[in-house]
Length: 76
Image 1 (spheres, rainbow, N blue to C red):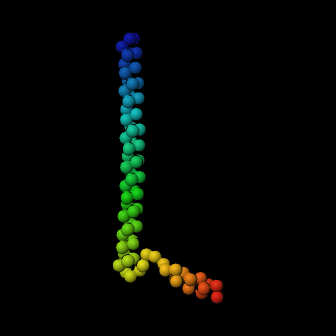
Image 2: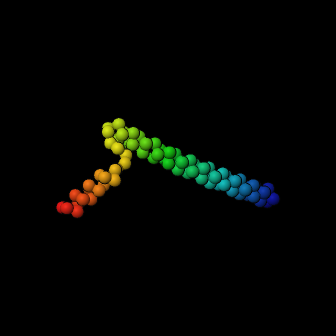
Image 3: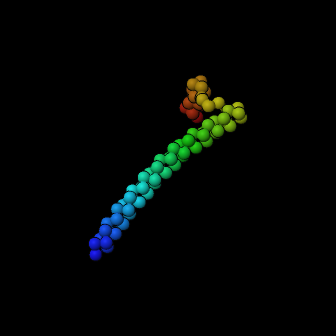
């Protein structure tokens, strides 16, 4: 009976340790996945901007162009 109780105690402690390690590993994996996702999104945005610039598009709009656009909208 003493050995059975000791075995149960050791097993419970071992399972607690295994669960704690699993949670820690899952948390680390989640953080790494989020960092990778942010880096991949930034890289894709940069690639899209480079493609637009290489095709001759500008990444900003002049104030003059906005003024003309608003004037055309108001006149119509």
